[in-house]
Length: 210
Image (cartoon, rainbow, N blue to C red; front, side):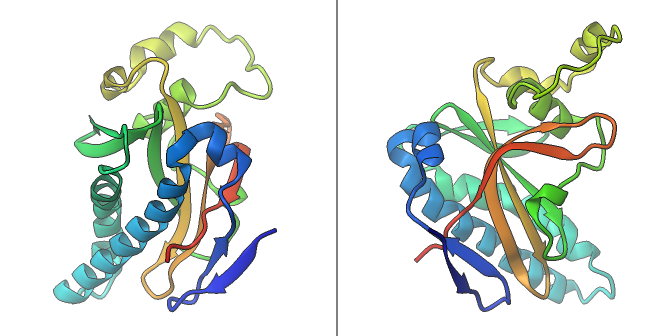
C-alpha cells in the first residue's frame, strides 16, 4: 500500500517499503537509492530556482537549463557513496551506474501529469540510443525495414563507454520552478519510434526521503 505526503512545493511523494522490483534490480542498495534519489532531485530543483532568481530573467530559460545540468551533478554527488557505484561521462555529464544499471534522469513535464505521458523530444541522440541499447526488449518486435545497420552506425559515440551488459533505470519526474518536484518515478521503458513516447515495462513512485 502506498501512503502519500504533501511537500512544501505543492507536490506529493509516495512513501512505501522498498518494492520487490527495486530489490531485484538493485539488491542490498535499493533502500539507499530510494532515499537518495528524491533528495538529489529536490536539491537540483532548489539550485536551479536559486540560479533563476539570481539572474532575474523574465523567462524560465535559466531555470530549465540550470535544472538540466544540476540534476546530473546532484545525482552524481548523492549516489557516489552507494556501495559499488561507478561514474561514467555521457555527453559531458556524469552519470552513475549502480548494481549494473545506469541511473538516468528525465524531466518529462513541467506540470503534474502522469509518467505515462513521458515523451522524448527526439527519436535520435544520446537519450534515444541509451534507451534502445540498454533498455528492455520491445514488447512488440519492430518491422524489419533494414535499419539495423544504420542504427548501429549512427549510435551516439558515448554509448560505447557503457558496459554492453549494463541495464537502464529511468528516473522520470515532473517539476516546475513554482511547485518543485511534483511526481517522481523510476522504472524501465522502451522508446516508441513513431511518436517518441516511452512505453513503460515497469514504473513505480519513489518514496520521500526523511
